[in-house]
Image 1: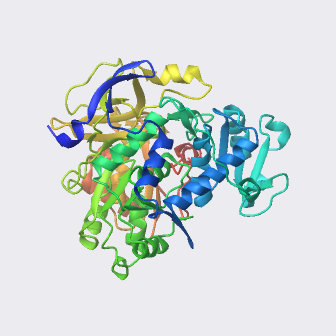
Image 2: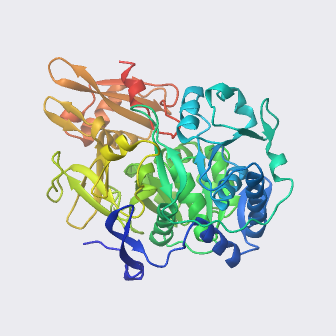
Length: 531
């Protein structure tokens, strides 16, 4: 049975949190996120904490800016528990406002800048935000004042916007604030889930949750002081927020912030800033392999290449291993409700266990159950139920959904997985995305991973198309780098690697990238509406 080293597991004891007993926790954790940030400042006051464009902030300078913004929020009349919304793209202000909100005891509510007016109105009203920080260039998408009655202040970043104060007016002078009493079970951040099946739900990430996830990344990826992580995914998503920003704060490392991902720019920035760690989606790795000459860049400092959501195509792993032999690939599976990782692939097994999303994180517990909530046998597929200090206590202002999705301390993920005798977990599919063709179960993730291995495929998505005879047929949507790729080649590739009933019945080629929601997930509902 694969397990984590004793120097990690010896730090764990069982505790009770959120009225859930027998939760494994790190006994030597910081008391709250503010304490964690202060530990980083004290350890490395002059080390770089943040790099973005031409701006470089040391931990001491970052701390000064956090104090100034926190004092400004207090002057606005905000107190402990107030909600501060961040409609900000990747940039230094995102991290500063986030940590300033926590410093004065507020709850930060990051929102993806791709959200549209109706979703913004729902989120702002649902969380009852008092203050909204927003990028000036998206002011035209903000809901009007009448539709957001709780919102008292709007502050624009990067320019002036009608109806908003400038961000700079808040930070004219810094003041020392008295310490705010924080309990580690207090909500620190509300992250709204994608809402692919309805209105977004606000997952409540507590100080306890975030600290444990940051420590899981730190320990399982063997990260230490002096790490430099490149933020190439949205900071408003749980991956960017926790796997990069909070994990670097935990290790007193540096967050190198990329405002928007472009393959060639990513490699150039990673080389120039001597980046040591990343966590991205597999498509991003595939894009720079397809579009760039990796050998043009000195990436010798890049040690850890994390990725999430699903196993990476074997062809991508082979290409990365060949072109970046010192890069250790690490699969991590998580979700917003899990504050990011629930499983991590132990270091050095990226090639050997390319089919796996890893083993349960040190403080995590995973059950794989059938439709009646009973544990299934080894290697049998079932729904993944997950427990641990990283599992959120529930959804903001939504007790019905909380009761529906959490049971006996476990979050019911809706993901279909299996676990082998060594404890390695395989992710098969979202239960709602499984396709049943003539009585055979087809896991769309398996087909997608197989097809992504084709050298001309950038990304793809599998859905079920209703059929009067078979129930469903398999329909694949493909975004390709080769205009000559045709349906026959796609079907032949799948037929060579999968059972015959998993060969697509229909193939649709998309000239543009596949539709994604604000959190970057492919929206299969949109694809289903096309057939």
